[in-house]
Length: 116
Image (cartoon, helix red, strand yellow):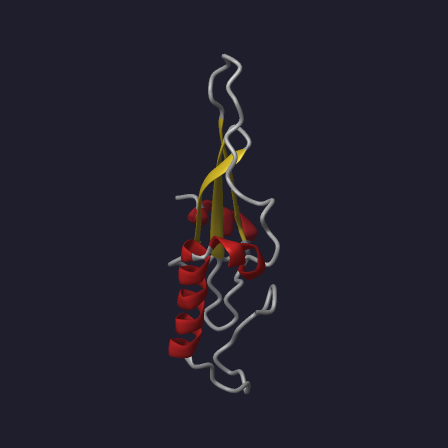
């Protein structure tokens, strides 16, 4: 898949078979979870990426949340996309990405609607 690709309904590109795509991704996920010896190859060498909880040194756990939104990233409907990433100490524990239901008229509105 191409990174930062902006899709539009007016695209003239060949249609993608969603069932085939879902089948391939499902097959890869099954193989990664059942065959540890190929997990590295299927995961594109991202073995160093993951959730690691650091040892506690008696200090309290720190929860950090980052959020952001784009401005009208959906070319067709002019809707913004919001994202949230939650860390427990230095380990990512949760994330969320969603398309906003309302059309923001400014970057300030996009950020506000995304965090509501």
